[in-house]
Length: 158
Image (cartoon, rainbow, N blue to C red; front, top):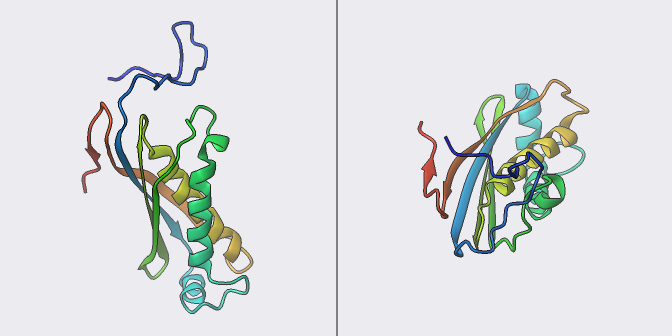
């Protein structure tokens, strides 16, 4: 098992020194699921939510969130992100699937940025629809794929 890199030998928190790592192309993809009443999803798909186009606002929130990840996650590095793509789609009668893909040429990965994107998109969907459905759930936030760097390629099976 790999060691925890955000602690020094005494157990104190630290930001990992990436200055000697080579710059490589890094990609991360993550997903989240938002479950709601079928009537709520119908309102979203028919663009009848009073606050506006839910999916487009959530997509914009996700993109903005990737840029703010180091402000939210204490030991994340600030990165000059090169690409953020967010897909939001109906999975079934009561579930929305959010997927984010983030890439950069850098010395550290973008997994946290991708997972932050899908989390904030889910929270935005909740915020925009809570007046009609307070029982929505946001879950299954997980890394799907990451590439680049010393640890190589990871792809979730299934």
